[in-house]
Image 1: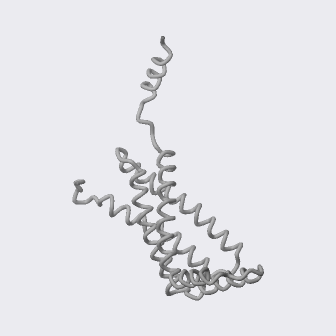
Image 2: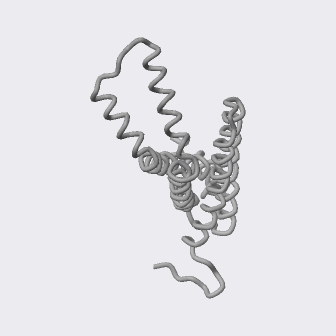
Image 3: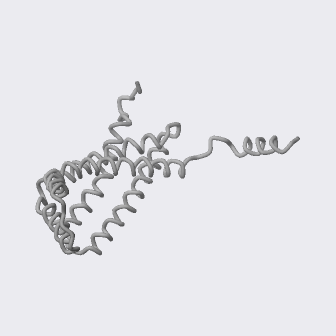
Length: 184
């Protein structure tokens, strides 16, 4: 187990705080998207959120790497992203279950009407499945948001931790290794 100095916070506490900061970007933009009726503006907000989240994760990993040069920033990034994904998933549940429950019915009504406009009738089994999905949409979206955000967090943590990594070899050692390879 990791020993912590009295005035130093643990990696997990620091990661939870950074995860909350990272999740705040998604929470704010997600709420704004619900309040916006314009599809173009919603898409623009989503792109800004994606780029902003990646940039913020980069800043978080760089700060952690500078203060802990002997530790992997990848592992820390994964912890931060999983904490962030948990907050985002809970917020998604709150949005669909309590804040904007009418939006779920609205989306499913649009789906039903677009299927009926195509001239095809939905089988009863499909209708039953859609009704069950509509009833449990907040839970389904909560789980899928957690999984999706965690997966993206792992991918971007891996990319960003490799991009900001310093070489473990000095320039002199690299030259010696390269010289040895070509001496027959």
